[in-house]
Image 1: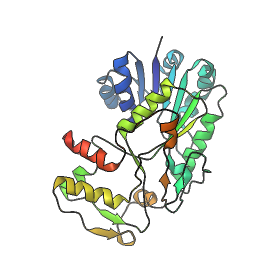
Image 2 (image 1 turned 135 degrees about the horizontal axis):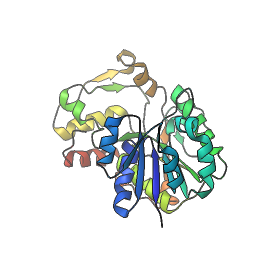
Image 3 (image 1 turned 45 degrees about the vertical axis):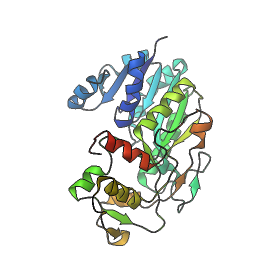
Length: 286
């Protein structure tokens, strides 16, 4: 059977998925906006495509599966802006489509629990754009769409160790603040499980089992390295960029039972302690 994935916005999470698919004989197209990034994509066994540009419609005509990681802006979803008609035309013959969204669509719940049935009440601009992008993809007739709402992503090269080692890590403390997070390898295994067991219309939260205050993660990373735990900085006193501060505008705990019950997923890294230990064991700078 022909298995061809067209990955829009081929980044960190998509690359983790293709590391699972390429050895199984999949053909993968991955889009990027720069020639420099195209060379790095090609080195992983993925055929790069500059977006927007030539070759996109041909790749779409060959694709059996779509993965959309490209983030929306105030102007809307960039893929649909350029290719809405072509995707609508291709939809009936696609076997699976996955849209990577964010748990930010749920908004602030003051540390309370949310699941896939929780109403979407985003409180940030990025959350609003994601909610609108989800709806735009859901509106495409016959598209076998699956929505994956991702918590904070970490993994090789994206962890706290480099900042802890350099002394630039900060433990910003805001009372009651908790975040959910997910290791990139667990994102990849959930996506692969969904491809094997498609359920068009399904929505899945992707997060681990242990929502935790961000300062606890930094402290644990320092302890693993045998370094001093950075001092706590009250949120009100912390100097932060507007984007960084916006992450603290929402606090919630995200439930993940659906990926386990419906897809049979067993998390590789069920909490940040397991994930950080694995990053350190792999000698990554995190």
